[in-house]
Image (cartoon, rainbow, N blue to C red):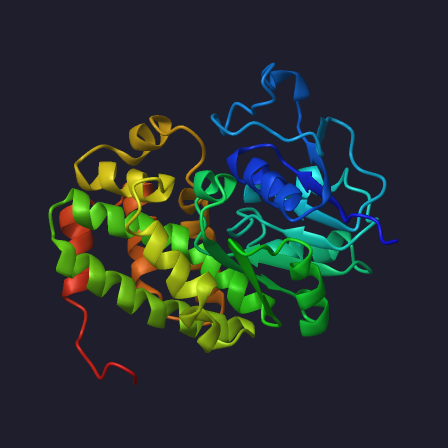
Length: 323
């Protein structure tokens, strides 16, 4: 008789809690690590994801797991290295955060690769709002690892009819898409906030896909990955959904709110704010032109305003679309 999969989720924010609920829905015994488990209410509800009670097969603890079949790291990207130091490498490690480490310019699996050189590593990404995954609404995502067979095996531990988890052997492309979509979402929000129109937002999103494909290729990923769930799928959701913190940050900036003030007003972290300058540096190191990312980085730094940002993008030469 086979035992239920044991899945550890590190991070009890909205996304970590949603992943824990999904893992339980898939039949796993789940350990959800939280810094302060006492914050869970008497109704077994985590404060960052109200309205979704945890079933009995989810255990909440501040003790790192010692045994697991899969470990999902759902902490913010800028805290990944610090938190991962306490994680025992007892199972495959899946990065469920999106972004670039600001201090080093490393993607999530590059950070984990430095720390766990002998572990199986993967990344989970896609167009997923936490509250919808928690509610069991239909969704899809991609789990990428260097070994496609391994990726499929790990994805099967979380897949259900309403959460379709596809496998990929292009973790670099998946990570680039996951990181950059937050930056593009800020630009999309700013476009709408400044009343530049829906046409402008659609053009921005589409041209950003070409930009991210170039960057993915330069880093060793496959450009076609950006046409999938971790690329255009995540861009469409994050650049149009009001639940996106990055989109809301851009919306406020487009309406004239200073970037710092807009960020302070958010509940939670808009990862694109730290990712934009780190991703821009990475692109420049590899000689890749990323005008949208560069414009967002300057907008967030306060060195340009919305009028400048519009002029920078609209004054670019118009060449062949796929040249």
